[in-house]
Length: 489
Image (cartoon, rainbow, N blue to C red; front, side, top):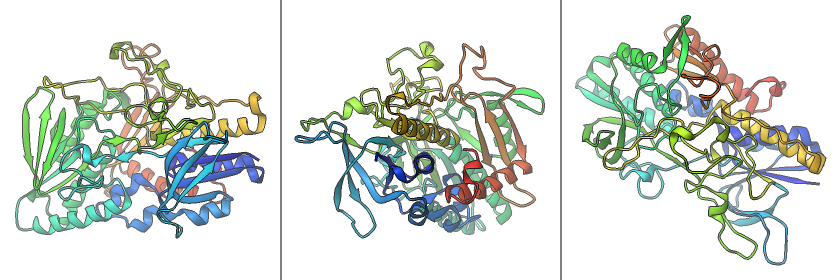
């Protein structure tokens, strides 16, 4: 009997574990180690953050789902990896520290035959002074929609602002809280949902709503922007985004590295080296992501963290990490197997794998400060990669050396994104976009890097209903309801 341990229970980890257990059956063990008691459909947190959904609408308890599936669930955080075992034993293991199940604070060693790192990101609020509290948590001056609990608090603060805006002029600031942030999409959705709700509350005229981002241009999204078909014409995401911002009366600050947050004020540096300040009455700033801080040790106890993980804390896989000028990177540098090059029975899925380079063109201010989005690996790509890794591990367990490693590169992968711009049965809108491939391939698609026949976008009520339906569909899938395997990632 082989044991697969999946570290993390988010989109990538949950997908890996549930498919692996279905394919392996009772002959082999699947263990999920995650510090969370609940699964969270993160794309809908923005609706919790404006009061259009409750926390209970976007989360559900993991324990009953894993018990039904026959998955060994440990509510704990992974602390370290020991891929060579320890003195006196060759058995590989991880150390965990419980965060629930009545064992809080207790540690344990879990042996494994195969290991998948799907730990997702550390929300690195402390990378920006004042954005964090100095202890790894969000600070007191801004709000977040990165977790369901954060979103509940964000809505509470937003309602307070809406109430005050009935009688006074106020300023709302939404965007990225550091020069190296990813996940502009969540902030993009949140700012337009705020604008939509402000209109419904009758306070829009008293609110100045502004976007601040590390993007060099609107519509970059950490993917270097894209050209897509809209209404039969090929347009840039820059034009697409600028039109939406202008239509909704949302101003913007671009190429900005927020370097300090104070009560009611952010300080930022821009790509041209200038320094600025922006006041606010309410601010939601996405933090940068980092690896969760896993350590790794050799058999003799020596620290090999740098061997397994990149400097940002994400796990190295079969990518080309050779330092090169941006112009020399190729689509082929991106991983295909998500397999660690040093220890072949370890894989990484979703945000947990280290990308070989950024997709957006790198940029620094004259002061040497890097200001550019980092590559997105959330949502649909996380699910696709998680399923591919599950296929690989299951094949290796069943067929040994003859096992097939399933390959799927983000440079050959399409993805769909539905970005809400306001929730409502008849007045809701969303931008529905597809992109192929996610990582541009300028050798195959000169000029744009992507196939414009499969990269397109539309905005309207239909998009909102698609996102609304997908919310329930993916929660249904995550709960392993009948037919769940038929629902695509």
